[in-house]
Length: 116
Image (cartoon, rainbow, N blue to C red; front, side):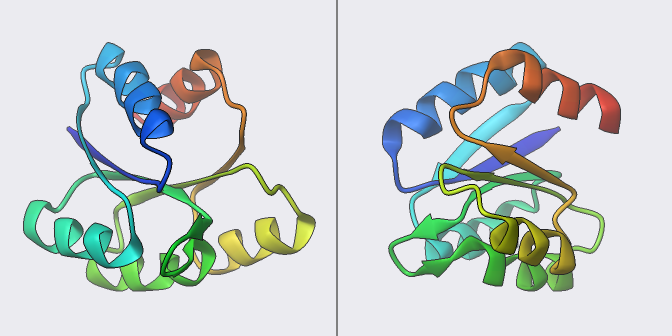
């Protein structure tokens, strides 16, 4: 299985990638919505870990586009700006999970294990 991490903070990409590899997921990352969508089209990952505040837009507004391309893809919104409005928008647009930063390994493992 593969996971795409879309986050503009490279440290978060490396940390999340390291955690996901412990669950035997192959990982790749993008730093913008455009770059992420290009990778979703070319690589068709099973998972997307999506930041909400990206240089070219809000992740919550990108979820429905991801789901249009692949309705079965698992989308995990990962954000440091945990507001009720953003959480509701994420789920309304098709997010499967919503995770606040800072996250820990156990919370990521729980999401993966629940979905497998």
